[in-house]
Image (cartoon, rainbow, N blue to C red; front, side, top):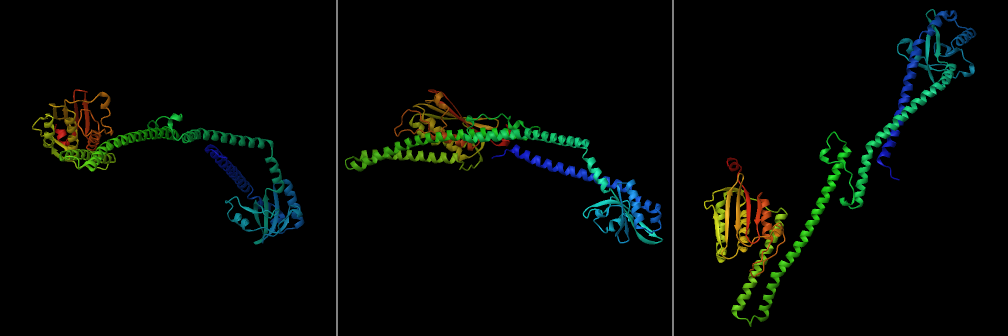
Length: 502
């Protein structure tokens, strides 16, 4: 049987409450009894002394057992709350007021008697009860002398057996019982109030635990469970219940976990789709290479030297394409895993752009495409990684040349902004449709065939460019219209001093 948090707390509270109540009652009774003893002993402190001085028999230091017994009996009738004993100098009981059958001691200890005689202000002091071997009672004591010779002690027990019996009956009175019942009812009412307060504070914990169990039963799928609205964790400050803050934090955590799980699911879908595309893209050049090599192996002697060279050139182009694709796959994997180092430095952007344009001059000339840099004296200073920046601009320029027709135009424009330098590569080529422009940076490479055609291909190159721009703390922006060309712009950070002076 499982016990809830509230039940455990209630049991602990009841046990602690009963213990505290018992200790309180015991302490209260002890305090009352101690105060009672102290008051009575102080009140009757000199009773024995007065009796010893006022009684002729004791005053002379000579006692007669029969006469003293008669005197004690008379005093006991006048004061039933007292018991009278005459002790010798060693504490032996010589004469007493009680029945002989009720006396259990033959002597009493003189230590507490002498203590009270020496220091009467320290009360209460308890002495031996001749009627009970185990009990002690308050008393009044007076030494009895004959001249200067100590004859014994007048020992008076305050609170006789008759007094104790009557006091016990009075304690059992109905009024006292009503008072006790009232106190008990008050304590029970306090206990119920405390249990209600405990229930109020533990109910949210119970609801939170039930919510956790419900989520666990559905594999933490938030869509299958209605979460209790605790409010947002950010809105619960020090003036709110900590349990509500915990519940709100738990809800935020569940939503975050579900978002991450959905993102992982989407990434897994993209990964599977990417693997499918890559398998197709790798199979195409491999199949071409395999076909031409098999042809050379089977019909090599029957082919002319020109045909063999043509076959080998085709194989070489496909091998280069395959190598380029594999290199791009590894490069993208390293970028996505963060396994890349950045060497930032200050340099003039114009020098790098002139080198990149020079590298693609021949390829552009083959298609009669004009390459232009604006402005020509480009002296803007940037703070970036030269090698990675060259990789981004080369990819963008190569894509622009591939998708620009014969006699086209490509313009590279550099613009100084407040804290950035904007480098744009604009062409008048085939452009990108509105449906495809949102996906051109996805890693869904579609390789071009060995034979050049006019089909637009979105591949790993743009995905690599976007990853590299993020590594360099830059931003890659694209504007395009189908049939009217495209414009790719890269925003490169500049030095902080230059940005402040601009």
